[in-house]
Amino acid sequence: MERSSEKRREPRRAKVKANVWIRETAEENAPLVAGKVRDLSYGGLCFTGRRKFGKNSLVYMLLETGYGLVRASGRVAYVQEEAGSEGMVETGVAFFDFGLYARDAISKIISKNIH
Image (cartoon, rainbow, N blue to C red; front, side, top):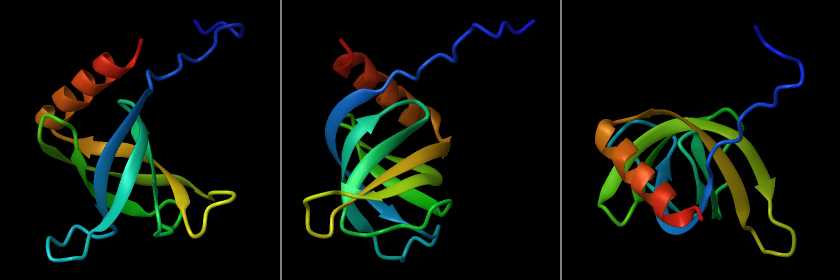
């Protein structure tokens, strides 16, 4: 039974500084676009970069974790131009696929960066 007073549990989101490389296609030869991760959770990540991805686009990522590079894919949840910065865009991605190794690395990052 769902109670109306219950609030949805907020995801554990860790503030991190890491590199991410993104492409809009699963093709291995497609060019990667560099970005900088701002925060990370089990549900997704937020990064900044110069490329503006379309909302709801499917993206494929290589994420630098400190425990090795991990692959993940997701859907662009939001895109927002950063005020006061020339050409920088903040992009939020909701994960929909990553392997056990990636989940383990993400778990370590979240545990290490949430106080």
